[in-house]
Image 1: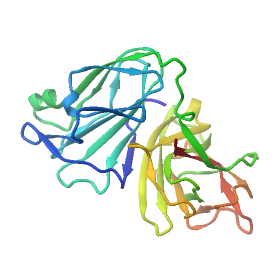
Image 2 (image 1 turned 30 degrees about the vertical axis):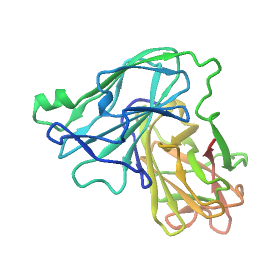
Image 3 (image 1 turned 135 degrees about the vertical axis):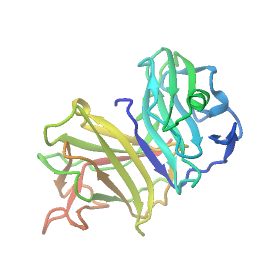
Image 4 (image 1 turned 90 degrees about the vertical axis):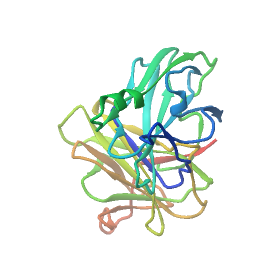
Length: 292
């Protein structure tokens, strides 16, 4: 995954608003640094610090602004740390957005993570509010990848037979979780049309009433699009086992979502509100993961 901007809109993201300076920057959470369930959680009070993490650890940086200024695309100086996604509280605060930047440590080394302010006409505020930390990533012995740190729940394991549909329409897959906290969703894509070397794909998670619970956007590289994992921050999203939820994908013309006739028994695929395949039940290829 590239480090261009992604976005995650999470209804259940709980946050506290506090101000920095003239309230142009906001921090979320009472403590500046905490580690819960292998997550290193940071906010603006950690700006300028040197910190330590281990390979395989998740890092979440929570930052907020007031007014037109926003935090832009994170800049990471080393492949030891990789951006996974960015979370935005929903409904957004009318004064300005709060983002949770989610990173994974992938190798030993040291990296500076810098998140600049954009849309600011004041160079002094841009300098003051730009966030930067230096993180030393050490060995974890036998680190777990993101997949390994989550529990597989639902999956469509039917063999693919070259069928796909583009992401320009309203394409959805329903599923029924068996575990109470959804940590991530993986989808299987294919390169459908020529285009740029990467493209943004957005996943919307909804409930049976049509309420949007989360929106996760990832920048997907053409060279590595087969299995794309969308990760939810803050330990995952609470869900009700046995209830029906939906996955909707949206994007450009570069990628298609793989599907099969038949397949996953506890849900179905739809296309603009109708069955994807007329007179046949079809399903998109996906997997869901619960928090371990």
